[in-house]
Length: 370
Image (spheres, helix red, strand yellow):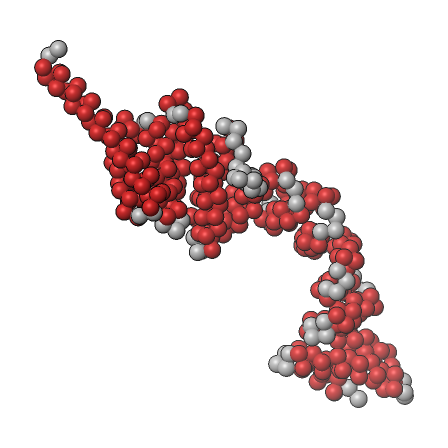
């Protein structure tokens, strides 16, 4: 063999051997840390593992990736689980070690899968912590990584259940994912997830969230609203959405029907009676409008709008009777009780909103009538 060539081959071999030795050192220091919990041993394990992975040969070696992923996971746990980059890199290395599967022992492969299961829960909790820290973009990215992890494990026929705990599934992740996406102003992503989710794992809240997010797409909004109401006909949030859509479209017939349904479900919500009163008043059905305003006031005596709307109807009725009886000698005996009733309601409005000019004007008009 040519002497210079022999020297080159020898140097390459020694370099590879040296890098493999760094992995061995990382493994040994990790073993020491697991026995004595000395931080310096863990830091040396990480230092050697990083040095080893800087070599291309080791970066494509299954066992080296496995050790690197194991060291990173241990480092993440030891340092309070706050470094998202570390746990992502741990998952990436462990995944790569499995992808290089033929070069990894079955024992190490099994351990790599187990570590990834723990990392799945790390991703899940990290997303929540980032969201609570008002870092919704980072939280969303963490859950995107979690989706990738779940798909990878599913492809390898692995469930995300640890020591008898409940299995972590995409359906468990979706609710948080939607919240993070909405808070990151990525409504399209949230809508995409919810559309898939209501087909696979429908719930009332998923339909209500989807209907709310589809506010700018009337056709799809109606589709999922009707679908949700078919499955959950007594869901109040869906019924309220239907009422709002009907009001916007001036479909009073459907709005009144749904308001009656809402009242059946929750008869103590004064807003339902108030809105129904508004609809009836717009249809010139003052008598039934008054009944609904009165009911709203019974439930919530301090609601200004219900009191004011009732007072206006009472005032208008009093004016009508006044106009019919101005030439009657006993006219005041006929119409003044109506004005008295209206004034009483207006005075209550005055107590609720002392600076309301509209209330003051109506009271003054009554005072001017003889």
